[in-house]
Image 1 (tube, helix red, strand yellow):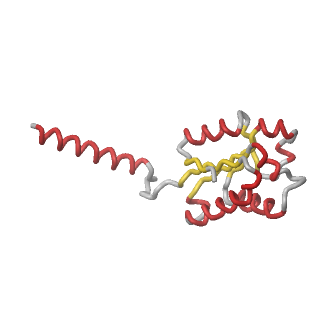
Image 2 (tube, helix red, strand yellow):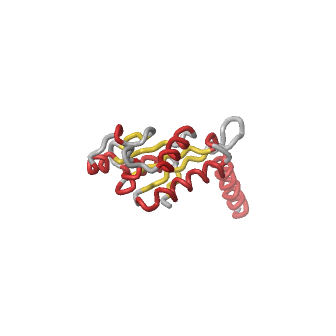
Image 3 (cartoon, one colour):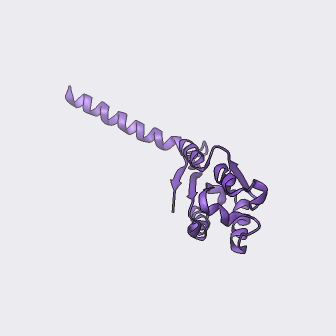
Length: 148
C-alpha cells in the first residue's frame, strides 16, 4: 500500500513539473518571451544599467525574445531630463525604444524634480502611482526583478 502512495506522489509531482513548464510555452512549442523589470535609482549607475539592458537584449537573441521595462526614480531620473541628457544616454533611450524597451518614470520623483513627461527624453511613460508600485505591479505580472 505504501508503494502505491509513493508512486502516486511521484507521478503527481512529475505532472506538476511538466504542467508548469508547459505554461511558459506558446502554442507553437516555443518558450514565451522573458519579462524583466530593471530598477534604476542611482544616478551613478545609469550608464551601467543601460549597458546591462543592451547586453540583455543581445544575449536573449533580440528584442522579440525579451520584454524589458526600465523603471526610474530618485536621482537617476535627472540623467533622462531632455535638457541635460548626455548624448550616449539620448542614443541609448532612442535605440532601446525602437527595440521595445519600455521606460517608466516615477510620478513622485517627477513632481519632486518639477518635471513632466514632456521634459524627459522621448519614450518615457509615467508610473502614476510611483516607481516602487510599478515595480511591484510588474513582479505580480511575472516579470523578473533586477536592480544592478
